[in-house]
Image 1 (cartoon, rainbow, N blue to C red):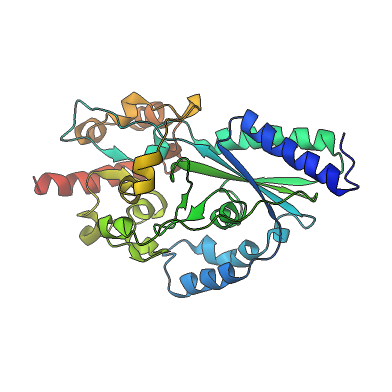
Image 2 (cartoon, helix red, strand yellow; image 1 turned 45 degrees about the vertical axis):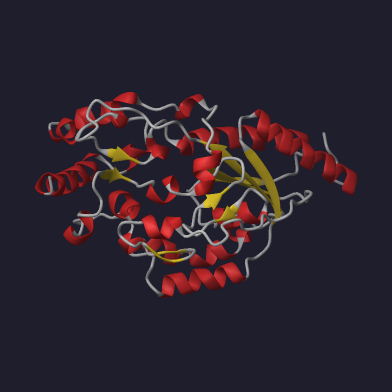
Length: 323
């Protein structure tokens, strides 16, 4: 048991947290001081003011919470940020000319459950050592700026495509946050290594990256195929083919990803070969039961059968007209 009555104890616990997180399978771990955000909140306000969040009203409704981690845990003093590599190699397909494309993060099991389970184990073990420690786990389910804390904790930097880039794995990582009510030793924030490169901006077919570090969700393929509930605008959908769930274009062209991508060691993220080899024709005949059987463990299940079929139908029809 750790008694947090001095710097030595804080240092010992911090080192144990870093070591244990890696033992649980996390690829990277960093620790930042919990405090209200400054310049980042100004950027958030500007982004919301310009309506770049499109129809994601929850971004605006809970913006105050995003500015200060104390909203989620009043006693918070430290933020542990973890990254988990999910990259797997591109897969060959028998339907190479008619295959749908699905974002690589959805090829395997839903990361929410995988990351939460590991963080839950870490938090339980921390509280065994420090019974007075309060904690909260956040994996996309709470209003917190994960990417900002990843940069502040030394995990990586926010690239021009607005994704977190690491020097070891590129941007092929899932993020998780653990809020703790104890003082720990904090890591040095990560510097930015994008340099003068603009390949992600130049490659985006819908020009959703309207400037360096600025994403307009109302033009983003991932937004329309995952978050958007209405009818996909035809003028944009012509640029989506063959992406029917998410989009990896800005990641695929990134030099950091091309050079440093490593295959994941997490078994849960190994690809569902049935899913990633689907053609448009395969899905046209799907029933809701077919959808459940194929997508039950994937993040795709979160958007539901009707929305997934909407994507495939809208994008597939345009693809057929253009071929």
